Length: 193
Image (cartoon, rainbow, N blue to C red):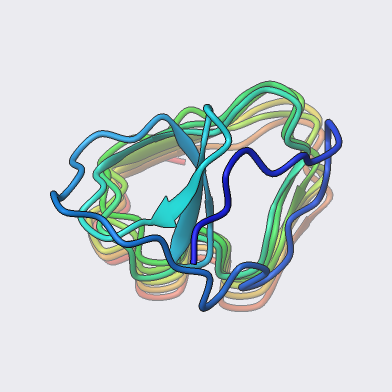
């Protein structure tokens, strides 16, 4: 089965596994994809939906507002470009992200729980429009070394950075009102706050 140029409205939210079991047969593996990922499949800019296996680099097209639940969970993505149109990264959306860095758009407002947990991130800057860092958002990011939380963020929820064992430096904003239970639990390398 092949979908050719599906017409999706601009800014459409694509939910968890929305196109699951929608396959397009291919003869060769793709390594670079200029796409928006949906579960185990991707929507290329030319409108074709294809299997996401073996893709390493993704570009989410402008106009996408939300990265859905488990959208990239356990995929081998090494590089992800997120446009300024994205305002929400849902629960487990980037769980186990393989890249060392990711630039979050300044327009981002919301993280779902465990949105980037268990990832290979080494550093992260959390934009000030995110008022609340969700439960377990960066939990078990064992390679994370530096966190900069910009002015505007008010709450760091429970277990947000739990088991980030290599975390050395955290910059907190003056706007911060609450740090939840176990927020920095087992951050045994922490040197600077």
